[in-house]
Image: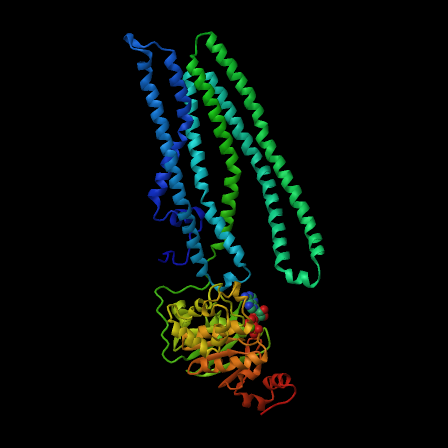
Length: 590
Ligand SMILES: Nc1ncnc2c1ncn2[C@@H]1O[C@H](COP(=O)(O)OP(=O)(O)O)[C@@H](O)[C@H]1O
Ligand SMILES: [Mg+2]
């Protein structure tokens, strides 16, 4: 099932939660909220149980009824309520256990899907690990719904309790109200320094762990320079800082919790005194005194709990909001409404007056190029010339600032992006692989491919032999990003993928520059076979790989400075000839 957000998310986090988090689970959430309130009602029920029970002893049974018979209904009633309450408690826990994983996964599912649809510009300068933790923050943020329920419930229960005490005696109620208000004001006033110190402590902590991760992941450099001791020294200042900020934060929290207790102590003393005075004047019953004391403790506990939760709520929501805003970037490349699929009939590619810039500087300036169906075009030029940018425009990772790119006469801006990318097999300089089996990595080129098709593609990519040499053959795991394979092996898996994809257009971006010459020659044959009958655009670092191309285009500073076949360009004695001379060791071979 895909989401109907049309690759756009609401501006505000709350709207997002309401729209996506609880989608399809409203009854569950409403049931949970009701049970939550039922469980919270103990704050009113428990003091009343004590009051009702003690009140039994203040009365005489009417009309010769035995005291036990008289008391029994009250006892049964209270016991029944206790049992009911416990049932609610279990049900609430069960519903919580149900919605929590469902909803946090639903949130992460939507956000994951959203970032997978994001444009290339979103990914440059971002780290995958950070995006993952941002998604986690947003999904954790939803848990404040429980804090809100508890805060709301506590306020309701406190008001009911104070109302009931008011019925007994307005002075006692007044003391309660005064103490609650003090506690609230005090808590709010101290919130800022509290959360600041907690924030500093957690920032220091994550900065330290960032440094540790950096240090550990560079283990090979550390080994190479025998620098373990130096690394330890390097981490020392950050460790020291973490320790002091955490101690300080802890210190502040303790005082924050500790101080109001003294006010409670005094308020309790005054309440007791008041009860004694009221009792000596015959204005209060023992059951009412028990009730008042019980309310006092209950309310005290509730206030401490909700105030204690506020920093947590602020922090959870703060990180969730920040992460959400950072993820919720509008897509730079969007499909037009009802975009039709690209239909590749011949595979003719045309760049028409294409201008492009990332920020200020033009990377491509009035670039024009036609690649005829089945033609193989090589693209060369110094690094930074704009070669990769050009193929990224063809893949529609970005849209040209001006001009247009046509495939068989269709402007790629107006077709569905997915259909465009389905029509192009793209082999990048450093293909990355999923940490899955070799089979799954190859199958990515054509989901649902048969074993035979996968083997066939691997053979044509000259990958079959090395795959059969791995421990579990096609079921071998390739490691994180393919770390267990060499550059050439990864490259061949990427080629097998492309064979399997069988797209009419082939694009190679310096696909062999990371390889040694021998591997390159081995792979070159695969490339030639792959390019056969497909419109091909190949960027190459080593000019020898482009010798057999139908046309070679030399790019410099975003403009075409020369084009022609290998031999034509050599005869021109221009830039290409110069580069060729350099790479072939001073000999111009004809
Ligand atoms: N994502 C990007 N954001 C900003 N500038 C970029 C980005 N990618 C490339 N550039 C700049 O665009 C120019 C062309 O880069 P590129 O197309 O990668 O060159 P080539 O592939 O020919 O080496 C370079 O100056 C490079 O710094
Ligand atoms: Mg490049």
